[in-house]
Structures are given as structure tokens and as C-alpha cells.
Image (cartoon, rainbow, N blue to C red; front, top):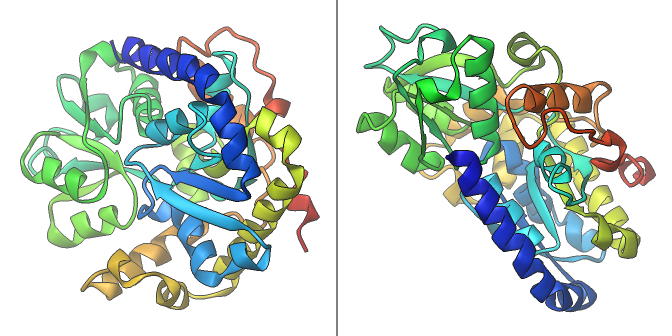
Length: 338
């Protein structure tokens, strides 16, 4: 059912893309670049806002507007429709889309690992000790067809639980995820920092699977899983290489900043509404997240193969199909950075 829903969405978007192709070209040629982020306050996507805050887009002579959608799949649809020039979302979408005949390429990798955590509600913790225990349970994801949905299905399948043995409920991220846990609408769910730290602090949930670190990700998925990234449609990339190089340089500067500054120093650069009245918790959440960020924006060796293996395990769009991984990412532009 979820696959059918997502397929229908993509079909509609692909059709609309043929109509909006002209407006996409006009938007790109106006000099302004609109980047859609799959949840801009999620820590996994922090480099997007931080780059703006540090002034690195302007340093590169770019006019960038950041927009936000609650889930990566929604951001992906905006890209396919030609409404935006780039997306900050999970790299795995580029593999999934290639299986549908659309060429999307990641030009900067932010996260070596997903940064995602499967949280189990305190009330369900007695019966859910591992992903093998989710039969008959309701699991929260940011959106149907999102990367949290991909990873949830994989982790369950790896534990011997098929997708028809549990329910998946799209609950978004941040406060909507927390509310879903508190109201017992979900027994467990996949989310990111700072939501993880907030749930732990309030005692509403505990960690079931932790993919914020290299060690935890290798244990859960069998290898590095490059996740948060900046990706664009290849036709745009082929005609806007100068802009792509500038974007990559700006983000590489940010990744270097992240890797040479403390969590507190990074938090000081973020807008106040990102941490509200609890800056210490935000700093702690950021500290927990620092290991996931790439030091140089390059695709980690073996990463694409791990992602393909995960998707091939359950995704009918990808399973059994030839995927040209070389077309799903490029290090060409991050390698130009100083």
C-alpha cells in the first residue's frame, strides 16, 4: 500500500515536471538557488542552516533561499516538480529515483551515517527489546517513502519481521513525533536529534537502535550509510556546474567548521528558535551528533554499496534492478574545495 501511494505521488510529480520544466529553467537562470530541506531543524541537516548563518553562501556569491518540508520524500517531490534546484535530504533517494528512471546526483555528503535513532516509548519498552519484537506494533516514520521508512523496513526485515506484520504511521519530526509518543499513537519510531535528547530527558522513550555513530551504524546496517547530503537533478547539474561548485565549496567550509569547533561554539551560530529556552540540551544533542558529520563532504568508500544493499533487501523498485552507483553521487565538486 505504501509503495503504491509513493508510486502515485512520484508519477504525478514526474508528469507535472514536464509542465514545469520551463519554470525550473527560468528559476535557475534568475541566479537564485532554492534548496528544499527535509526538516530544516533536524540536526542531521544542520549544515544547511549553519552555512547560511556563517555567511558562506554569500562568500561564494550565491543567492540561496532555504525552505523546509517535514520529510525528505516531500523535499524530493519538490525537486522533481522543478520547484527547487536542490534538496538537502538522504542520499538513498538518488538510488531509489534511478530505479524509476530519474537521475539525481548527490554533490556533497554531510553525514557518513544516518544520525537516526529508533526510539521505543517508555510504555512499550517492556515488550519491545529489539526490532524482532515489533510484530503487531505501530512504528513512527517521518513520512511514507521517507528514508526513515526505508531504514525501519530494513531493520525489521533483518530481524525477521516482514512489513505486513507491523503498522507504519507518518508522524513527522520534532514536536509532532514527541506528541505521537506521548499519546501512544506509536509504540516506537525513528527520529533524530534534538528530538532524541528531548525524549530521553523527559523519560518518554529510550534508545532501541542508535545510528548516530559509525560504530552503531555498522552494527545496525553492516557498513557506513552515507545519509544527509545535497542532491540535484543531473540535467540541472550538467548546465550549472559553476553553481554546483560554489555550493559544494560553501558546504565543505561548513563541514570543516563543524569538525574544528565545539558543540557549544556551533550552537552559538544557530538561530535562537532552534534551541528555544533549553540551549544546554541542544548543545548536548549536538555533541551526540558530531560523529556523524563528514569532515570533507566526500562520499565515504563503500557507502553507496551499503545503501544499495539495504534498499535491495526490501524495496521492490530497487530489488533486482541494475543501479549505476557512479551516477548517484560525485566527488568532483567537493574535491575542488580548498
